[in-house]
Figure 1 (cartoon, rainbow, N blue to C red):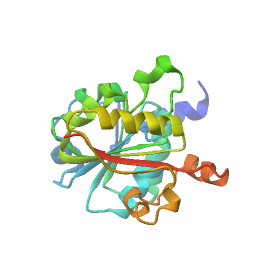
Figure 2 (tube, rainbow, N blue to C red):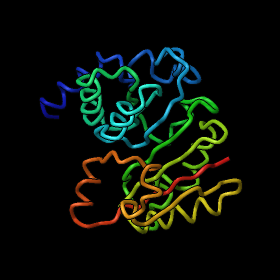
Figure 3 (cartoon, rainbow, N blue to C red):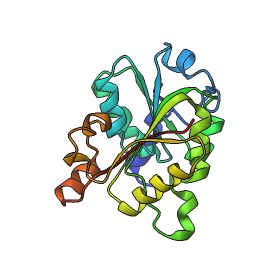
Length: 220
């Protein structure tokens, strides 16, 4: 492991805005994120697979009256997001290092108000379908930790993943598709709902002329 990563991991261990294995807070905040972590009663938005935190930090800066969490398994990526948040002086954002499959070990029923999935790995192989972040087993987890009426947003460049996600949600009992488009930036109506914050990948895809797909839905 490189020295830079080791340094970042060491700093992560000292940062109060990062929850990760080895810390006393790890798996101890279930149902208490508002009171014990954010120390307020503001609604919580979770970004699943936040990468370097562009979207999580961007949303936190835009909506100071809300709380935001970025989830990722990579500690060096979380360090970058945490550094961005600290540089901007944001106190309504945190990061948790964990697998998306373990959501129920970290969040209580109805604890979140909103979930974002931004440019996830499309997992194109048929055998990897269950690993897609919009696969039924993930939707089941999202439904349990979202409050009634809570929103889920997906942004992706990958048309196959978008089609799969839309079909999966449409087939799920009780789920409601609220908005969808295969060319977000050509939709003046939907763009405000999707937020115009752009991640590194989104900027790259747009520069390459790849349309951005967007899906918004409820699960209950």
